[in-house]
Each structure stands twice: as C-alpha cells, then as structure tokens.
Length: 121
Image 1 (tube, rainbow, N blue to C red):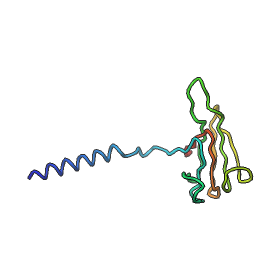
Image 2: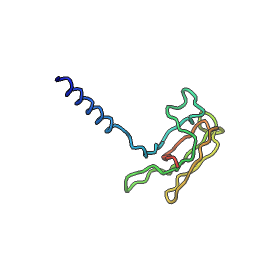
Image 3: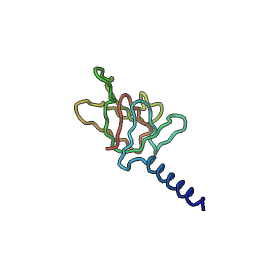
Image 4: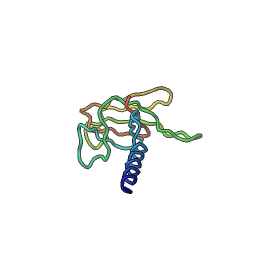
C-alpha cells in the first residue's frame, strides 16, 4: 500500500521535469556569430562541427555592449572547403540600419560567418 503513493509521486515529478525542460515550440534556431557551418545536404567529415540547413535566413549584426560596436559583420557562401579564395560563391554584409537576408542553397557546401547571426526567415 505504501508503494502506490511513491509511484504517483515519482510519476508527477517526472511529468513536472518534462514540462520544465521542454523548449517553446515557437523558438527559432539561430546560427552564429563566428565560424564555418557545413550545409546539411553536403556534409563532409572533419571540416566543420556544426551544420545549417539550406533556406532563407535573416542576417543580423552580432550584438555588442555600449559604447562599443562590434566590427562590421559579413558572411561567405562556399562551394567547397576551405571556405576561402576561389571556393567563395557569394558574400554579403550585415547592415545595422536595415534587414538583410541570405539564401543558402542545397548545392552550397559551407557558410562562413563573421560577426553575424543567421535566423530562419
């Protein structure tokens, strides 16, 4: 008879923990603010530790504390590794004064971020 209250208490505790640890359904992932992200349709071992799915992303300048401003942010879309030189397909800047966007294509191999954060648009 003493087992039933303990089991009920454990079940209630597990349910409460599950509610606390659940992430909000509306939370959009973001990627940044520095580093090279492999595009998930083109994974290549050893070149990146994080991946980003193809799609349209809003580009935001990485935040900084007043009175300082972080260096201007920019991104590279790349056809291969390393994400430099002739492997760069396109580049863009994060503008502080207006929204900017980047379209990451399924054919891209990587995206290199420099002081920017990408959020799905």
